[in-house]
Length: 159
Image (tube, rainbow, N blue to C red; front, side, top):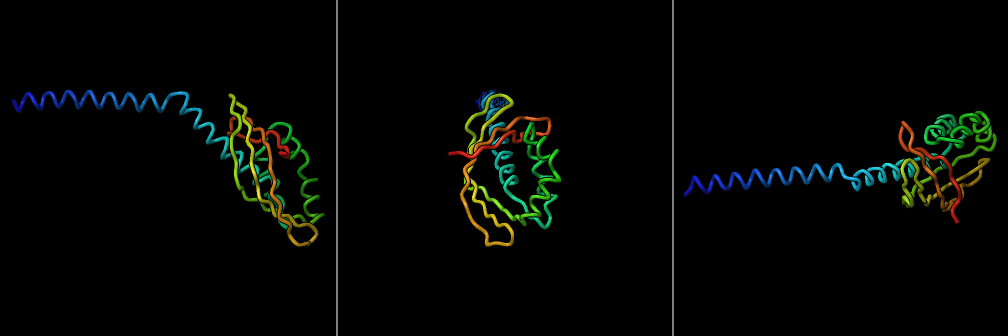
């Protein structure tokens, strides 16, 4: 009787392990999991990119502008990379200091290799040595999947 009990228990354990293994594999490879990973990647890239695009310090503007180029693609990325010196001159000429923090962000659309993010940033900006002014900025961003990951393709103020 004990042998039979252990035999049945072993069969049940093997069946349960197989079922749980199959369920885990199915969940890890289904469309929902892939879409969730993409959504998380879009949200992270969009949030980080929008903060970067609203941050600069005129005393060392080069790394900020390089970061703008790094987080963008398409026409926006081409504009920043082709206009790099002008961006640096504008920042140093106006003694611009800006820093942004993300308040909230959400993915509003994800369709293949394009996505849309809406975000609210708290931005502190000062120019020409003036006192910093704080503002809340609402932005819509379109992101495109590139071989290097998701990058911002366009940004517009949200109403």
